[in-house]
Amino acid sequence: MATTDTRPAARGPASYRTLKAFGSEEFIINKSRFIGYASPVGSEQEALDFIASIRVRHRDATHNCYAYTLGTNMGVMRYSDDGEPSGTAGLPMMEVIKKETVCNCCCVVTRYFGGVLLGAGGLLRAYTQGCASGLRAAGIVTMEDTARYLCEVPYGLWDKVQYVCRSLPVMLQDTAYATAVTFTLLTRVRDADTVLAALTSQTDGVFLYLPDGSSFAAWETEDAV
Image (cartoon, rainbow, N blue to C red; front, side, top):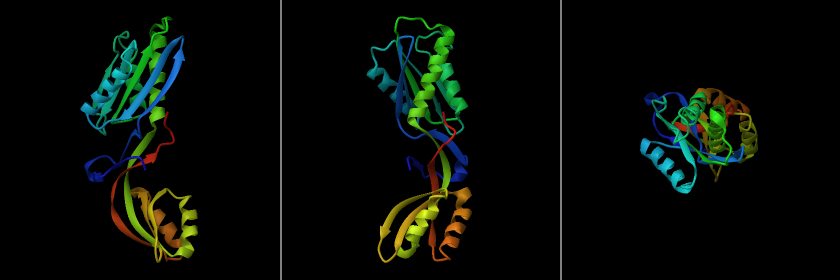
């Protein structure tokens, strides 16, 4: 699990998409070198600090263009062309982020000019690719309201429980071996009834569980860029 947020579901949306971790990807277009960077951010200051860190790393670059969003409803959106022709860099990057509905994220695309002019259309495509590649490298995850259960099963059923869990939308954590096998089970709130019923049925009712609260947790997103 990459990220957790202990905020109750009632205080926010049932789910939202964000980035798993920092990531970067590099490519060349007509001799210009582009590097797409992306990172999760929790505040405007974090976004600005991230942008500043990339500018320091690439202080000799021709441009360091950026776009970022904040809030689970993407209520804050900022972008900059950093000297590229207006509308050819920051805005296309923001359009990628909006299309992927990724919030609390910041993307910077660094360019080292290679001597060949790309034109407005070429720049738009390059910065779109740079943002998409940065998001892909960082990994898009869906934060969902997730139930947590403290569970226990006899040793003789542990292999079967693990096998059943491979086909269920769950994450297992904190496994311990004592008089029985204990572990923490995470599942989306919307899947909880189905998951618990399946494990209870497959263990003939021997599977024991105790609710241990809920939080927002990261689940892999299959339809990301």
